[in-house]
Image 1 (cartoon, rainbow, N blue to C red):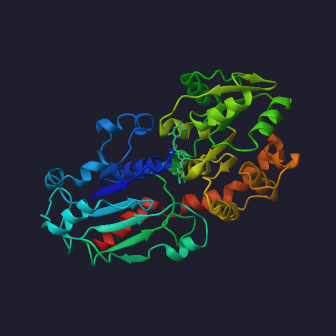
Image 2: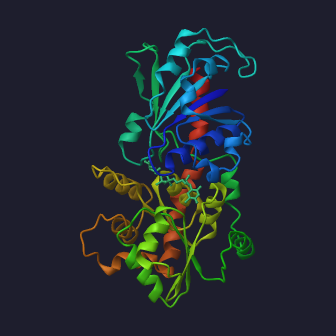
Length: 383
Ligand code: TRH
């Protein structure tokens, strides 16, 4: 089938990061995807070749072109539309579809769908472990005005239980995760990145501006155990700079500032480190798949909605009390002054238990139907 996926970049990298993963995931299953995005710039480093159409099955297109009638007239109509994270599909695009007879396209369907005019229209929501997700997943929303009046959209909620839309997990990932990167593989990976790893414990840092960052850096500096902290580009690097200036070694901790990595290398990084600090909704999932202890800096919202979202996630993951305290502190959700014990879960000895505590939830989630499987099934049943 042919899919149109619409993505508006609000801020940061998660919107395009998730839409790109979804697009390539569907393409890996034999689907064809047009990804309409208003700011594709992050794809230059996240997915080299994406903008040059070098990824089979995925075409990245500028958002504005989805309102050009001549462009649309020259394109086959898609079987499915996905509007990601509540972005509205441009009216002109909807009107074009509603008003033009859709010819049967032999390249994209074995048989003509029962209603050629109407696509399967999906509103893909943000990821959350909160209970409302089960209630709202799959709800229909009739279109009450405009050119598509009378059609309906379906809300698709990714999530952590069987009654939700599931999680993004590309084909073959579960098998790949069986093979743990050994020291040689890690060395080769870090060599290629120019990181002079000499066996120290490895921590990756992808975050916004966590209030506990200075305390973390102090703890690592004072620890008898040498640490290499791999700091990702952008806000994480700026946050570390704000504490350490240009210093790249403080006590026991050596700092490496990474370049922007492709998503593939970003995922490798999470697999190769002993502990990962991640943020937002895409990297937290990748950290979960990586199977190492991770600390989530959740995307902060004005109305503090992120606090309940974080609690629901921790409940779903069966985090220990110490790991929950650490998360609340890392996210600035504890009253200050934060007790020094908040960082206790980070001790290497505590992390062994933490890693094994993560296993049951991760195993269950790896066995659940993933998001693309569910989207495909829904689209097949409703086209
Ligand atoms: O960048 P984010 O903070 O994005 C956020 C969240 O998605 C949040 O939920 C959303 O509401 C907000 O944007 C608008 O974090 P996230 O979701 O982890 O996305 C980061 C993406 O960037 C992810 O796909 C991994 C990718 N990445 C790389 O590929 N290479 C890199 O070097 C880095 C640092 C990130």
